[in-house]
Amino acid sequence: MPSIRDRIKNADDGTSTNITIPEWDDVEVCVVSMSAGQRAQIFDAMQINDGNMPLELFWRVSLISCVIDPESGERVFSEDDADWLLADKSADVIQRISEVCLQVSGMTDDAIDTAGKDSSASAK
Image 1 (tube, one colour):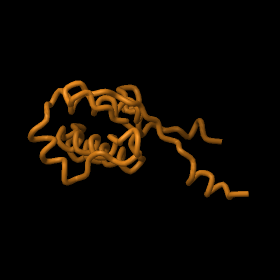
Image 2: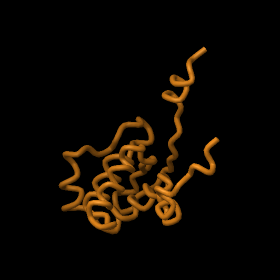
Image 3: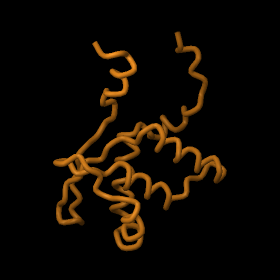
Image 4: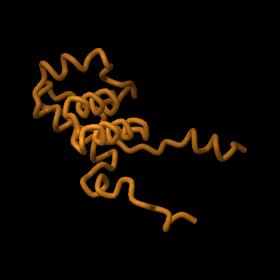
């Protein structure tokens, strides 16, 4: 029987949704939730910038981390793609994909507002 550690390590605890992007010839991508480390990177950047998220960083993280090929499960974009994505692609499309990334990552306004609040009352 696998150990608890192995069961946790192998559990697929992320969420995802497929979206179609009409502006990109109706390409369909899967937008997956951020990992804990990716979400921490976003919140760390907000702390450094007085609570403001640098939009370019947010778009980079969300595009590179959250957009995967629904058939292969591989990431669609790499760090090398970020420059042309941000320079050449529509801000409306990039924003729409990033908003879906926020939703599947549990980073709605309510989730962001409660981040870092004391959860010891629910710990047992």
